[in-house]
Length: 380
Image 1: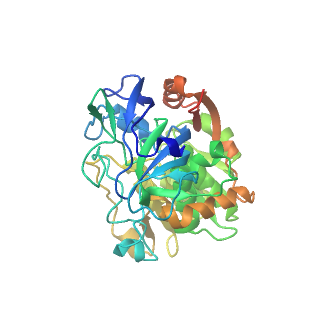
Image 2: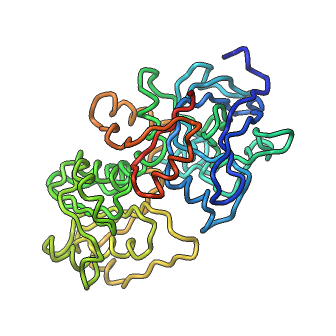
Image 3: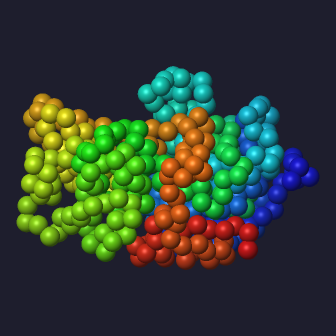
């Protein structure tokens, strides 16, 4: 691969030209990496709901034309000036948030919210010079959350790349670069349920199922799944969910239903929908005195969270988390090792695989609610 170092690479990418329209496989030019940047050859990428959300562009600023994708596995092709921790041939996971290792957040044991590299969904260019590394006939194509993995080659800041065990199968561990780590980490790093405790998980998509998996691994005795789609329950059992509640089946708030089921409330709850009503229910369904609720889902930009202050004064705790509180470079390699050591199951999250030329099928599977994760194989 070193023969291409320093040169523009022509390759295929799936370009989103406008909101909600099928992606188009185009030949793009990918410029060499600049200072602190790395060019990656993407081998597998998965479709995450966040890609769909920004492709639809209903709740945020539309930035088009754009190359989406942020959950992937690949190999370092070449590195730019100043890159010291990665070399061509390294196996890596690009991550939508970063770790510069120098800011106050990166130096803190409690935070993974890097000042320099935290997610910025509106930015369509690289931090170094404010320019895109993608173009078609000289016209720039915008980046997405610093990763843009729906391309055979992409350029990513060094701080947004986790170097992983080269023996790890990239078609499986690619899902750890976003959704699965987010949900799993929200439970094990933030909610921290103890053995025998009760846990409620709101939303049984990929992130919610990963949160349930975290509760299962932690030894929770009851894991209550909450979702408006009753068809999800059978699948959720594989991830440790023991009971299912569909709020539509009751004529009272779901937090009251859960409190009745659990003698006053669950010990922990994890909210994975982004719906503000579900967030309120997740907080109000935890037990007074020791209950902890963790918010994972990203709400609409105008959403407002309302609850009575007595819910706090009666010793309930509300927490938020970002990417499961994992620092990408420091922590994600060890999560990959959990998979390699069979402490974490990933195969059951991957329900579909398509070739790159069929990438729009992955969107169809997700929009119909048929897939948990669809992995896209870049090489035909």
